[in-house]
Amino acid sequence: MTLEQRINAFTKLGDFLNQFSQKEFEKNETIPFNDLFFDGFKLQLKHAREANSWFTLDHVVFTFKNWSELLNQQALSEWVSSYDLTNDSPKTVAVIMAGNIPLVGFHDFLTVLMSGHKILIKQSSSDKHFLPLIAKYLEYVEPDFKGYINFSEGKLENFNATIATGSNNTARYFEYYFGKYPHIIRNNRNSLAVLTGNESTEELKNLGEDIFRYFGLGCRSVSKIFVPRGYDFDLLFKAIYNYKDIINYKKYENNYDYNKAVYLMSEFKLIENGFLMLKEDPSYASPIATLFYEYYDDLSVLQEQFKRDEEQIQCIVSNSLENSVKFGETQHPTLTDYADGVDTMEFLSNL
Image (tube, rainbow, N blue to C red):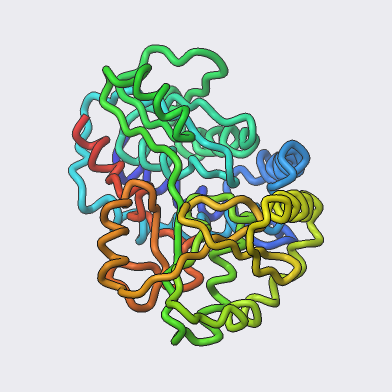
């Protein structure tokens, strides 16, 4: 199978997913094999939301919209042009996927197949409804994919390399079990924002998207902010007020109430607005409905801290630091925004 065939297949997949990029799904009669897959995919969306109530329609649609925009011929061609993907002997890459947000393992799925290798997938029970049908669709639009995509429910066997994503605890297990293979092993990371007090209302409003998208469950979700001493938190609360309805979602509300009770019993000082709690805390990982904050005195000192802690940080939102993400953009990664900063395509091209 040629690289051009793979690009064309994923471009067609992008067109297919575009039908599900808004809450009112629109069937496009020009999409190949739509009669076979459109209704089935609608049903899988329903099953996924029933199986994992964190997967709201809004968040699922947001995911498909992002991927439908990235899976176009120009973007895919530009992405792969930086690599040598002349692969005459495909390897089998075992990919263990997380399930914290919808299709969280799709970038690994895409990268392995675009590199010309075969993929053996171990899905999370929290996110298992979308990928099998996507894989079947790819096999229809490009029959040469048959035999390249396999799923495993049990022990992973007969593979040459591994990409595994999990918690800090499971990462230690992955290291033990897969250490003898070429591997990429990812553990917990969090994203953060650095505020100076000079941000515009629009920037702070966009920060709300970085905080609340996927209920804060993604590794690219902002879980902590750094602010200068004397920072006026009312600036932030006023800007993110439009996200107030998130508290009406029962699971989020339950986490809000539970964490608030724990904080109050422990006599922690809180700043809250009825749908988000701010707690001063040195940790990067905050619970649902909580945003940790920490004061800083010097941006250069803060940057040194981030360098020391880089293995805990996924991305940094700021308008004052180099190599940072713009406000509101953490959940819009590009094809070259590799998890943990590890170039997955480079790893695969060297197998």
